[in-house]
Length: 204
Image 1 (spheres, rainbow, N blue to C red):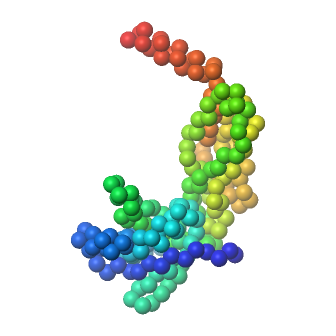
Image 2 (tube, one colour):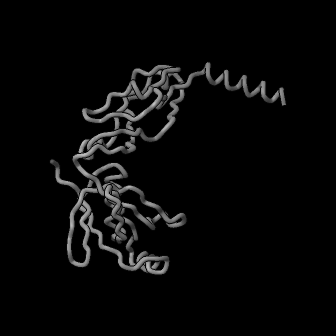
Image 3 (spheres, rainbow, N blue to C red):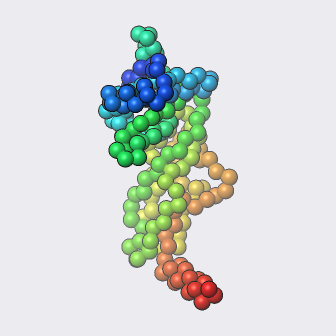
């Protein structure tokens, strides 16, 4: 197994707006550690290491959370579940960690990566992406960094549906309907949209 990134956090004994504000002034971010057994632990983490970890891991990559609880250190696999940023500065103001069991399947949303340039786009079509992530189920250590979608052969009016995508071994997409992930629109569709808009304006 590849060595996992480690992130050091400390148990947070003081909670509430005042203590949290003082933490942020010290460039620390308050947070909560949750696990699958219902355990919730208030924690704090240094701002810069958190930013570096989130930049590398995002929300869907496993790392080792090194938790210091009054001098007793525990290390557990976890995900950076949610990071809430302050609206003005854009800096993290709260973080949620989620502890996981490496032997059990987990549902996560993974970003996808497009490779190639489609035939339809080269001919003047427009690439439309209907979502940013794809929800999958797999073991935590099998979570892919991204799902690769090759769009080279896509012509105008072609679409990629979830069932068209090749997933890594051990990774299963979650869906009820065979939804479209992306589409290459063409002149015909643009003309139809303009025609519909014109009819609507005349009706009004």
